[in-house]
Image (tube, rainbow, N blue to C red):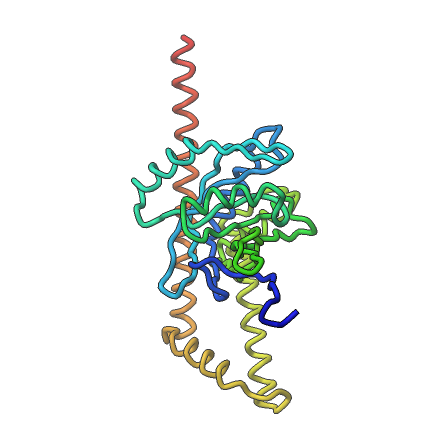
Length: 288
């Protein structure tokens, strides 16, 4: 058979997708998905839902919000509550019209047999949706989070099926969010850390990072490692951005901020106590 007559089996991206598609998910989305999984019906093995966000100018899918969609799964069928989905979408658009559908999520490891059916539905809602999977079991203390897009499998010019292809996913968190995410990954937690305990953890981490910087600078000065111009410029910018304070002035600034934090904790504790007393007095008055 001549080479020109051979039938080629190949993967071809959908018209709106490219090989450089990336996604970025905010921690609020992960927390919301885990909360929905905890509150799922007893008979449900997983939860699925809609992802909201926008597409950035560089093509990155920015996932900023989500909501669960009730569903039922059978051996080879998936039934979605489409009316509920549209009602929730209208409610979200009233609050934030900039957030549109960018894909859907499911809990568990990887894609399943019914994922293609659900992805087909969301493909009618938005072009080239992103499928986000979250391992809510947190096996081995790691929450595996992956993102996929659909790639068409064709035989010559005839499309046959769709294949999920993993895309790069960026989970960016500030330090406070990372502390909460680390607690979420722990299977058993005695108690949530207080503000002071959280500050202590952050300060320990800051001291560790400063020691790492000191060690790197000493190694470069002593000639133990080769200098990196990019790291040097980054350290120069970081040091230059710090305000110039004398040690006594810096200690006073820290102590003043700490006292403000303690005052806020004290006032909030008094407020909670007053609310609790008011509730008990109101209950006693109703009983009398």
